[in-house]
Length: 220
Image: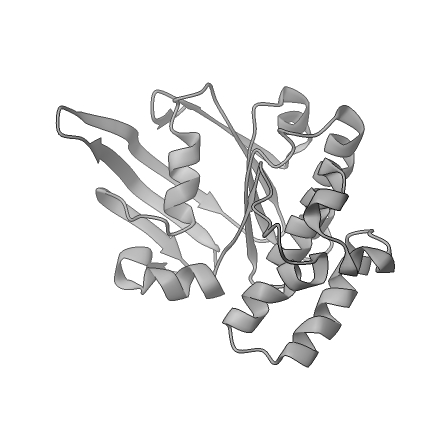
């Protein structure tokens, strides 16, 4: 069974003065064990599409199906906690929480005991290649590449099969870009995640299992 299926998905932004159709009849299937790159120029609709998959909104028409169930029929807050994990370009870490506390936060939101969450956080810190001492540091004390590793560890702590990444290497240098993308590939190939990455980087798109391109709200 596919993890995600998009069926003729359309999304219209409405303002006081106009309506803009940002996504125009997109259909696609996303499966576990693969990394998908979604590419396109700014304004092509790729980030909007990722937002719909993340449950930040529901389509104006069509369906986003997660394991065969339409997100429109789900409690979106619960869906975002339990079904998908999102990794952002700007990391979205809490500046006043330590690395360990940032990773623990979504686990504790799901009712996991603090002691268990802290133990899991330590495992994830090691898994993403950070030193043990990083646990007690604050995000501002880390490099951009290290902060993105923390963001990935936090996403893995959500215990979902799906990782959605919006320009996850956009703020990183070439070396860290290669390392982070390699990590995402390993998560798909070795750990069986469904990984969907929005990116402008043609080199990253070439390394993906499947590259989807968007133009004017449509897959081309």
